[in-house]
Amino acid sequence: MNKNMSIVGVPMDLGADRRGVDMGPSAIRYAGVVARLEKMGFNIEDRGDIFVTRPHHFTETENHKYLDEVVEANEKLANVVSDIMTAGRFPLVLGGDHSIALGTIAGVAKHVKNLGVIWFDAHGDLNTGATSPSGNIHGMPLAASLGYGHERLTSIGGYTPKVQAENVVIIGARDLDQGERELIKRIGMKVFTMHEIDKLGMARVMDEAIAHVSKNTDGVHLSLDLDGLDPHDAPGVGTPVIGGISYREGHVSLEMLADADILCSAEFVEVNPILDRENMTARVAVALMSSVFGDKLL
Image 1 (cartoon, helix red, strand yellow):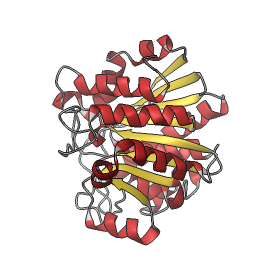
Image 2 (image 1 turned 90 degrees about the vertical axis):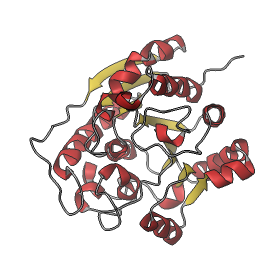
Image 3 (image 1 turned 120 degrees about the horizontal axis):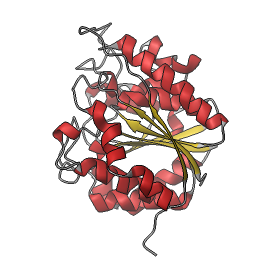
C-alpha cells in the first residue's frame, strides 16, 4: 500500500439534513487517527477541512435538499482528491455525511480508468430525486456516481459515470428503499445484505466481494459508513439500524481487504459526535482504519 497518505476532512451535514455529523472529521482527528497511522509507518499530510457553505435558510430543489451547497462542497473535494492523486499520494477522506462520496469518487475516478467500489453501509445510497422519500442527498451518492439522478450530481467533476455497476459491491445492507431495490435488480448490482453475511459468514462474503471488485478494475475505493456497523458498536451515527455488522466482523473484513492490497483511496463517513458516547464511534473508525491499512497483532 502507498505509505504516502493525505487526509482531508469534509464537515458536511447538509446531505443528511441533521446537525452533528459535520463535526465528524474533528472527532476522528481527536480520536488519534494521525498518530495511529504515523505509528504504522505512514507519511501523513493533513490538508485540513474543505470549507462548506452554510445557507442562511432551508433550500430544496426538485426533492434535493441543499443541492447548491452539496454540489459546491463536492466540486471542491473532487479537486482536492484529484490533486492528492496527482501527487502520488493515497487520499483518506473523513466525513461528514455520505454525500461527500460524490466528490471523493469524482476525484479518484479521474486517475483510475476502471474504478471498483466497496460500499460498506446499512443503506444502498441508490436513491434519486424521483425515488427518495426524504430528499436527503446522503441517500443518493452511489446512484449519482453510477450516472443516475440529478444532472448536477452526476456531473460533479465534469464527467459521468464515474464507476460501472459491475465494479461495485455493497456490504452490510439492511435498510433499502423500494426505488433502490428496483435499481439494484435492474442493473444487476452485487449486494451482500446482512442475510448473506449471517448465512455465509463475513470471511466468505469478503472473499467473494474482493474477487468481484478486483476482476476488471485498476484500483478500488473503500466507502465506509459507520452505520454499517451495529449501533451497539457504533452508536454515534445519524441513521442507525439494528442488526448490523459486529465490531469483529468489521475488523475481519477490513483485514482481508488489507491483505488483498487493492485499495487506491478510502473514506470514512457519518460519525456524529452529538449522538455518540465518549467519542466511541470515532475511536471505532480509527481502529477500523488501522485494520484496513495493514495493522496486525503478529
